[in-house]
Amino acid sequence: MDLFLQQILTGLANGAIYACLALAVVMIYQAIDHFNFAQGEMAMFSTYICWAMIAGGLPYWVAFFATIIISFVGGLAIERIIFKPLHSAPVLSHVVVFIGLVAIFNSTAGAIWDHTIKTFPSPFPDGSFAGLIGLHEIGMFFVTLIMLLGIFGFFRFTRIGMAMQAAAANPDSAGLVGIRVGWMLALGWGLAAAIGAVAGMMIAPIVFLDPNMMLGILLYGFASAIVGGISSPGGAVAGGFLVGIIENLAGTYIPAIGSELKLTVALILIVTVLLFKPNGLFGKTIVTRV
Amino acid sequence: MATDVETRADPRLTVGAKIPIKLVGLFIIIGAILPFLLGGYANFQGTLIMIYAIAILGLNLLTGFNGQFSLGHSAFYAVGAYTAAILVYHLDWPVYVTIPVGGVVCFIAGFLFGLPALRLEGLYLALATFALGVAVPQILKSSHLEGLTGGVQGLDVFRPPVPEFLPLTMDQLWYYIAFGVMLIMFWIAWNLINSRTGRAMMAIRDNPIAAKSMGVNASLYKSLTFGVSAFYTGIAGAMAAIVIEFVAPDSFTFQLSILLFIGMVVGGTNSIWGAIFGGFFILTVPNFAEEISTGLSYAIFGVILILVIYVLPSGVAGLVNLLRVRIRKLL
Image (cartoon, rainbow over all chains, first blue to last red; front, side, top):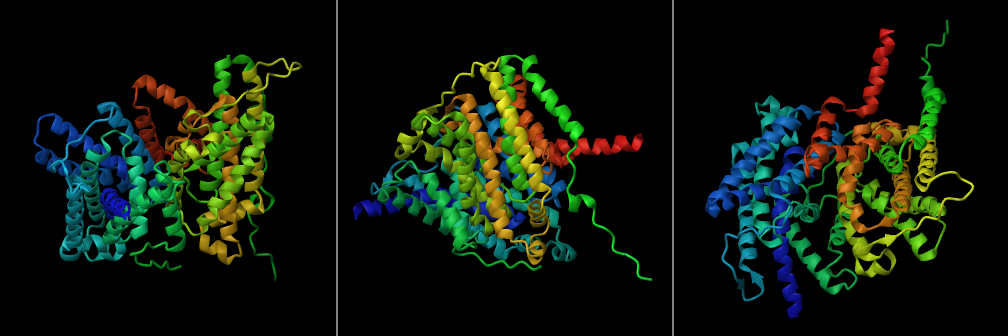
């Protein structure tokens, strides 16, 4: 029983990582209706920027918030410069550009900051709660919850959040009532990049910083978003924790999986959920008209 | 006055386009002479280009002609390669037989993975294949399969010596084998696309709902296309394993998927022969990019990829077609 409890707690701790990134995935999906395959690499790049600032002598929190702002502007710029001309281009073009961005960020980070693994500081004190779960994980859990509440409030109670939803749901009508649809998209990109940056900075103390740190985690972020429902931020966070727990329990109790086949768990989760409950556990059903 | 007012369908649609025999003949002659002009290493690289071209052609059939995405074709490349390697290493099969076997195993794997694809549209399929591409190296490394796959160490594949009656080096021999396989695969793809099946594939790409209401069994064709695409990639993977004489999990990472994807986009998603250029591109540009700046080769790839989407959405093949039309107008 102890082992079981411990695995659940470890699962929750890992789940916090996935929930963080899943939020960013959902955010961008809400704004642009696409999965951003470059999300992980963007978050990784932001984390490197933060690392460079801390290494340059800035205090943690200054670097933290500066990174968020830089990432926001960066996300905005990516939409305005790269994606705006491709607005009506087919899905393939978008996927191609995502892949291009993955390659660019990954390779540039490696070239600037080399490929050695770096440690990244945590803003939370060392130690653990009753020896079961680290304080950093608990802190990360709360950061994720704060972000979730922030996103919820933003979409529910601010004009600009409502406008973003309108722009995503029905661009033409939104444009007719005076919403600047293009800028709403850009804003969505900016916010997703900022959330991704927070996720990256929260994850890096655990998995260490290197240019390839995000590939596996992004897969789990996608799995969480899919399990929870791609249209629901709350679902994505719940999905994140769920995936974390499933991953750990499967690793412990199914001997064939162990610690080596964890990525396969994500693969199986994604395919299974898409097959049997394509809208996820908490998502809304979307009907297409002919 | 009853006259025949119905316009006739474009004959290319009913009869099928003709293979441009002169161009293909020229291509075959050049391809056949090249190994005697090039050195051993260039031969080897030429072989790899053709292998990549076959894999990219598989991806092309899937994306360009059927409108499905795959970011996980490195997985099928790996399955093909490992099938060949395991058959040769553990069971001492002759290498030549393992190439089609690798393809068939991949066809089955692709068809089975494509079955869920009935449910997954566009981006969701890209996502599922992304997961497949990321997960496969880890599966290959797994200790449960170590007896079969050799784990992290990988497996050696030994090629038999060149038969004595052939005045060729090992590199030349495999260049010709790859060349022959490539021609056959391209011929099959050409016939496939210019057939009833090919038209159904393209109808599903262009308007799935219309295709379904015309009686096209969309789910069957989509899974079959996925299987055929995996078949091509598996053949390429098996040949790569034999030519390189080695397989290891880290040769089949997600980056290989990206590479094949880049080759497809740059060559032109809608063109069969664009795949050859795609293969050429992904083999030569990394070397070239390394010379400009070490470590940045993938960044340069990324920039080229985005530029291609802006200025050449139909790839190099599209550019050549455009130029041909322009020149014809001038003459």
